[in-house]
Length: 267
Image (cartoon, rainbow, N blue to C red; front, side):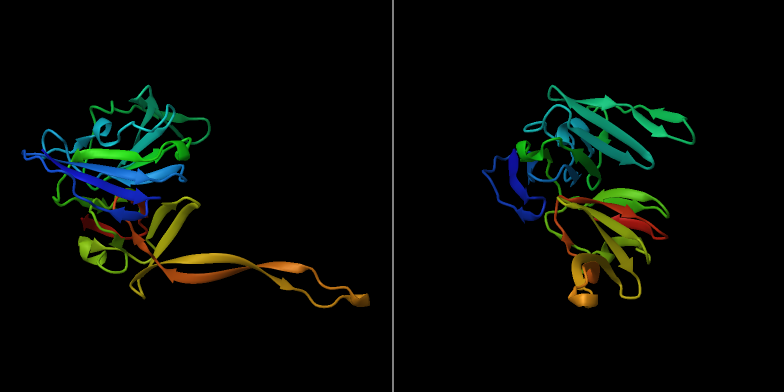
């Protein structure tokens, strides 16, 4: 076989790709190490295909290795409006029922397929929740390496979990528009990227043809002089600055919230 080793994501941010010893066979396997010790929630890419048949999508049970993870950690995979969920029990991903609250006290329960029976396509994304990130690094993803194209469909008015399956960072304001083989982002569409401190929201500004976000910093202002020489109390202020979106690293996923945008992204 050939081993494509190891893609390292420091805090799901930096990317380094190095070649390991190569053993000739029809398969080239890939290992992706996510070295994030601070994020409880990680949206991660499915970068490769099935190990035994490269024409098939990989199985959930194969792509996310349980090494370094702990009982109680769980995975979520969204297909359309349906969520699938697995909890880690004794090094095995066990399916969980999904309970959706509806109007009043009504609920709707959905079952999840076994992790070794549900396939996830390259370019899709998994949401990994870890109870203790510091003890679970790195997280290993595994599969058969491929550079085959992958697609993500964006539907009007829906929220899609997507990911960059390539081995280079995705610059939202340089090259991302060309990846849309049909349709395009629309004004007001949002991309949510997970950071250790929470989510950062990028909004598409059609007039500027850019993805941007608002950075908020807290300051203070001092009030005027009070009677008898007293001074006014400091008043908190929020300063807002609009900035262009940064690149999304390889291996990182994101939520795409469509306002009116629709089309197909070809990775």
